[in-house]
Amino acid sequence: MYHVDMKIKYRFKHNVYYAFTYHVVWSPKYRRKMLVEAVAEWLTTIIREACQEHQAEVPNVEVMPDHVHLLVGCDLQFGIHRLVKLIKGRSSRLLRQAFPPLTTGMPTLWTNSYFVRTVGGAPINGISQYIESQKHV
Image 1: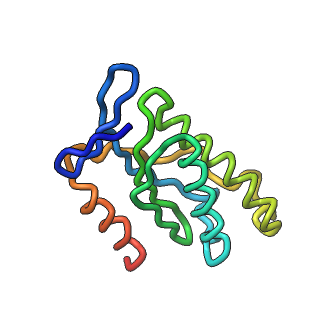
Image 2: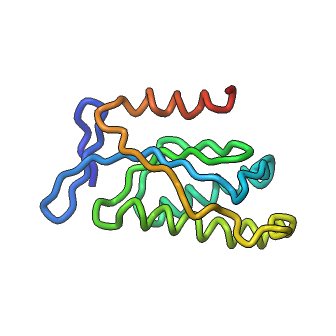
């Protein structure tokens, strides 16, 4: 359940109100520039579907050739670490099945690491614009 107050979406679950939005960035193994065209489109779909299944809100996702930016709000008790692990695991499996060249010379699709930061009081629109602008850098 969401409650809107001055552009912040508050969630309520088990007597706790919260509003966490995370900026998450991760990249393919060896930072290879393989997330292009159909791969990028399929990856975006996988991310959005996985988030929807776990009631995570996705204001923005941008797939660059060598990394992914995700702006996401997820359930406090499910946790961002579990959501990222789920997204990376599922997307690795499905992308490698759909695009066999992604299996060549790489033991895994993604690096083990990722960057995550809460966006705090920053306006979501501002963070979303920043993520979109990364395509032009």
